[in-house]
Image (cartoon, rainbow, N blue to C red; front, top):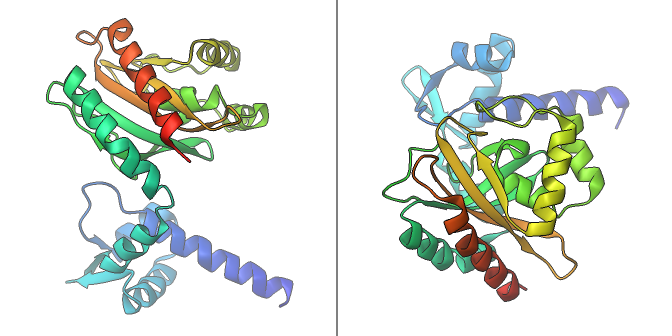
Length: 249
């Protein structure tokens, strides 16, 4: 295959990824013009690619617009390589929710972001932006910091090099501050996030460690900053993480 062909294939793959990723939570169907606007892809190209995606079931036509197809859900179920982890963690997350009446999360790191594998929402918790399968910048979350604190140094530096944007009113955006906080998290085994991901939100997290001491994932409890006593829930979160770590293969 010549270099030009490889470049064309790479561009097509990138455009398909951009089109599928353009759908946001709450979106149903989107028109081609809106997809072109969100992705920056020329409208003619967006129209052609959405036609191909609809033909193979990755998108579905509805009127003059398209929506994500059921085939994506089927593929997604096959892609969940962490199914065993999710199943093992679910009863522990439910216990955390019942004990604290706040939202319990299970998340892992992918690139510079955390991906939420499971969420058990609490009755007294705020309406959080997190969702199963959703992503959030690692530096602005307690689960992200819990994982980074037990990850190789080059991974931490990759997160810092990618930028530390302000997400909430108190997000850590200074590399030095983040490094110092991660060192403390590594020592204590518990990470805290106080209005770093959003106004009025507090989160306490602890990592799930493998036999080498590296973080595989993290569990957390999130709630209102003026209601949740971080010191009171920290022991429950830490105990959950330690117990889960021992049960995982």
